[in-house]
Image (tube, rainbow, N blue to C red; front, side):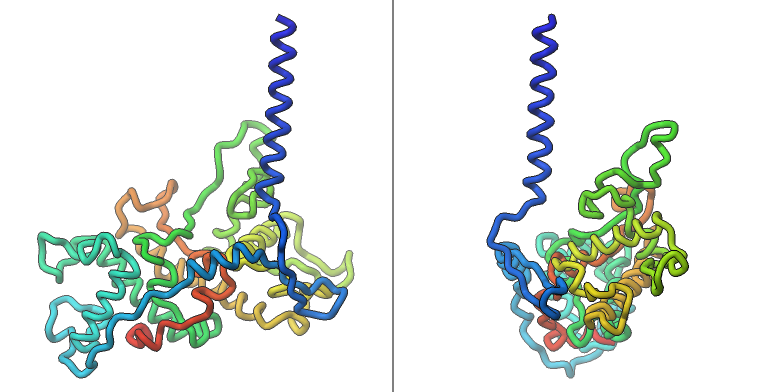
Length: 340
């Protein structure tokens, strides 16, 4: 009996060692890794990239060939088709061309039937997907018209998020994490759970609800020497770090992409990307609150999260690991209808 016990303990120890090694290896990148200096020498202003991951990003960010151009001078779609609530100002040919592109971007396998019932007129709103798609077109036009502080002249299309899938790969639902123990061990406030959203660290499990739904205060760095400077506590700091880890992974960059290593808090010394990111956080927050959350009652239960909320966006929804989605190439010249 003693021998069996010793053998069991030994096997358990070996398993634990291999488990630790597995965690270490999964977070390790084999060389070569490229480093690009973006600031003064010796101050750590460098961007680190993995050439193998860069090659994957280039491969995944190839744009499809645009639909063939058409004559914009045909009759308005709203006068030819019924129940055209958006894009009705387009000519019929432009309208059909854009519908074909959206089908390719969002539901290439399902085709038109993803939004239009095969048993009813195309004008019917019986499918929730059509109601959602209409609102998403409005959202896309809103971004291109009103959020150039983040998307610039590059803009966005349905492909920016969907990439050939009815549901974008990178979305999030409200999630309090796995069940926790009773007693003092339960008072973890979403921490020490190795959350994937925060790089498998023990930072707060949900970095999105406080900042990309609510308007939580992100800035925690003091602007003067301690102890008189900071009025932020450790909990607030950890939540902010969770969001920063998400942004870093979502864009495939490290901290010095937006911050100056000499002074993280000082805007005047920060790279220009910090301003773009500031607007991006507020863009995501507005879209979640104004466009996505109001659609909660439109979706069937199987498309909602565990707590009954609708899927929402974060930085990874568009960026997919790249600092510039689709290598910064704009599709709007081919689809100007998606500008308001």
